[in-house]
Amino acid sequence: MPSAAIDRYFRISERGSSVAREIRGGVATFFTMAYILVLNPIILSNAVDINKQSLSFPQLVTATALTAGLTTLLMAVIGNVPIGLAAGLGVNTVVALQLAPKMTWPDAMGMVVLAGFCIMLLVATGLRERVMTAVPLGLRKAIAIGIGLFITLVGLVDSGFVSRVPDIAHTTVPLELGTGGHLHGWPVLVFMLGVLLTMVLVVRKVPGAILISIAAMTGLALVIQKLANLPADAWGLTVPKWPGDPVASPDFSLVGKVSLFGGFHYVGALTGILFVFTVLMSAFFDAMGTILGVADEAHLLDEKGDLPGINRVLMVDGIATALGGATSSSANTCFVESTAGVGEGARTGFASLVTGALFMIALLLTPLATMVPAQAATPALVTVGFLILANSIREIDWSDYTIAMPAFLTMVLMPFTYSITNGIGMGFITFCVLRVATGRWRSVPVALYVVAGVFAFYYMMPALGLAK
Image 1 (tube, rainbow, N blue to C red):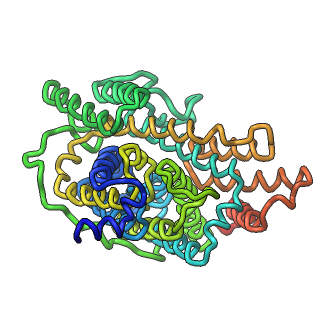
Image 2: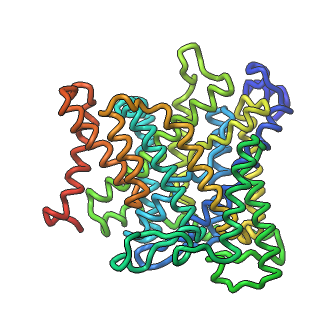
Image 3: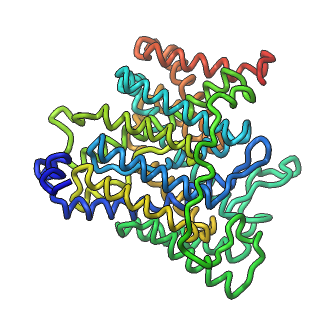
């Protein structure tokens, strides 16, 4: 496509940008997002399904890179905004820790595909924005914060910094520091240094802070493993070891391993619907906030604060959710790290074209990702958890207890019950009850009463003898 045609299609000059700026922006976005190529496989491969089966780390790297590349390219061509997409943190935790243990991996990924179809249907019918307004801002922000706290706990546990007490019947605490209440070994030290380094880089606003930290701590882990020759189980699933060949053909074995409705056989219709709803909610609000935030940073919003053509962007986001399930990489969504590209001058989808192309190139570099231990990658979860909280907590009206109390329960129940579903459900139920109790029942949309009622019935199912 000639340069003039590229300029017209992506409206580069019209938006006050240039091809050089778009290329710089696309590269910057890729490097700030590239950590997901390691982090997503670690989260998913650490979990097992109902048959005690786990997913292959190298195959997950391929699936993660492939889906990020395809969905970001779609955003470039259809949405024409400088937004990169990849496997969403929080959603992948739902899949790994809530869905998979109740069913097989193909069934769990089928739930993700169904959630993507629901999002596309909501966009096509114009209901997505209506659903957005049905949930109060405070609860939306609480859901995001709860997910942030949840993935922080996952990072602490997966790194070995925090561990589950084997038999809580004979102890006063369910979790403890390290092992036996003490920190032991080089791997935990790598994690602690990684957390400090990541936070220092973020505080100093270093571009690509998370990726730099992962690379640096992986290098340190390689040196430690070479000198100390630690046993493989000291690191967990991934032992830091330089691959014989850093370039290899991608393994697409996980692509297409999906069962759309098989999960309902294991958990029943209502629980299955709520699982799909949980995935939808986890991706739904985060994506909308990210899209508007990045668009605002790029000065793409109109005088009313709306993004022209937002339905095209939202449709791509729905496709990304479904495609993530179809490739077994978990739901893909818009990444707030795209603001790094905007900071370099990106204003159009041409930047996303560059980001997507780099993800496709990364398909050949799977061996490099497979040498990263959890202790080098999980500091990113702790830092991202903080960033989510810091960006959202001020937008909750803590003076209105009918919002503040449900928001509080939403936030704390996600990590404390190890379930995002529980946080959302209890938050919705409490909000409806408090608004009715204070005579403000008319301020609650009917849709929210319906959802809260479904959650209430879900929690009563065991007492009614209906739980499967």
